[in-house]
Length: 410
Image (tube, rainbow, N blue to C red; front, side, top):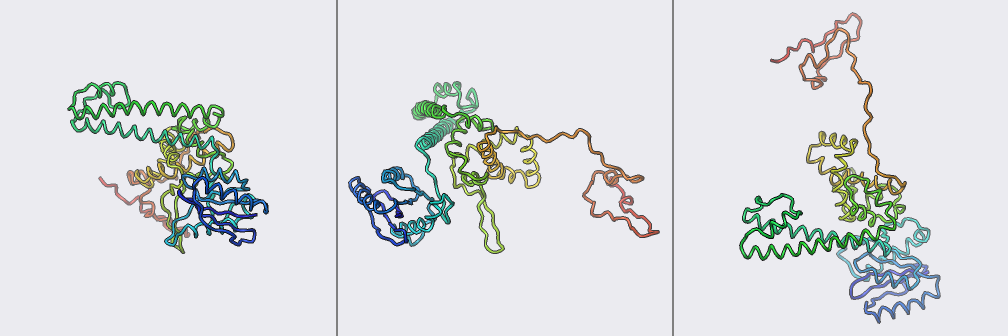
């Protein structure tokens, strides 16, 4: 079997070919022009016939599609797409292709046995249907962002004249607000800009509606998982579609932490010796998926009693700001990812967790002949618990409790 490593660029590809013994038998550059690339793969196909096929490895980039199709037509046994590491100050295309070839050859047995490779972060490209859904969700997010910018520009023009307070409603995405914006008297230059922004606003609304309709059509065949994720408070139909398009087959994630790591929600770390530093989340996954989970956090904290109690404890222990950042950006978002894993893996819906009510209240037993500390210290409670001396256990010892000698302050 042959092992082909490709370092892909816009104008050319750099190839590195190794045999079964790991020796480099060919390396060079090939232009990405149609005639040159077709000639290379036709020549390469003749060489592969003498062997038992070949494996290929490439780094992920924004224009991998055509190259992956070429490799599939060349009857590649397995295509490995990996996440590139940080760039080196001694980088060349030839060295990159050689290092990719070495990684492929060193992990050849693990790839053939469907095992996890060593030192490689492998990426599984989405199938054409999922890739189109991802593209549509990204396009919808782009349209929503552009519409928000247009609305903010309109609000900025009216804030310049201190006229936004005269609007009939504070909610801008209403017919009343648009009608008021279109009819209110403002200077000529501002009116020209506002009218242009209103036309673009209408265009973005139309395009967003068309995009969402197309997304709904593509999930009508199997809406089961979408309704599962919609059972989570704060996740809409569009949010469920975005998450499902990024997750794909849930069985490729062995445990919930793998899904959280895929979304970039696990904390980064830098450990050396006895120094252990834990930072913020890695943010290596889809930013759109993290945004959907981030929006759902407030709804879950408000509607799920167990989550609400946990949030209160964290807020009382670490403060309001720290608790909000921890809940919004790391902890509860990661819990969301683990909940989603269990829901999709075991075919379950979201389950609310409520604390069990105590039917019989627990009453503290009072010691005979002794008042409780709260009555003696008048609300000081357990703050002076360390100052209370334990009674002596020796025989014939006089029992002294200095708490009773304290005079309450007026």
